[in-house]
Length: 85
Image 1 (spheres, helix red, strand yellow):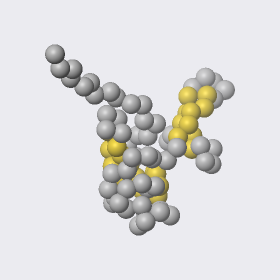
Image 2 (tube, rainbow, N blue to C red; image 1 turned 135 degrees about the horizontal axis):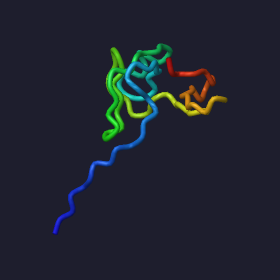
Image 3 (cartoon, rainbow, N blue to C red; image 1 turned 90 degrees about the horizontal axis):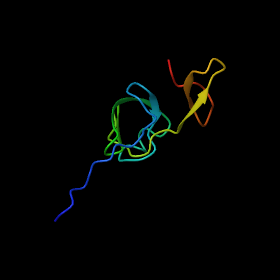
Image 4 (cartoon, rainbow, N blue to C red; image 1 turned 135 degrees about the vertical axis):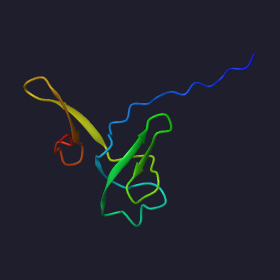
């Protein structure tokens, strides 16, 4: 009996419309110091489509914090600024 591999959906902290910097993929040299907008996120393949660039595997690092009122907000791990609108 053969086992069929299940597609596992991973948790990606990026959303459509976020600004990221391309660090992997074919266009990393062209977009190294530029930010681009996320067009789509595929959590099964762990791929992100970025505006004017090819797909990348490892997007900008995003973390989570809780505010004083108990709500959750996404932050940039490098600078600590809020990513949510």
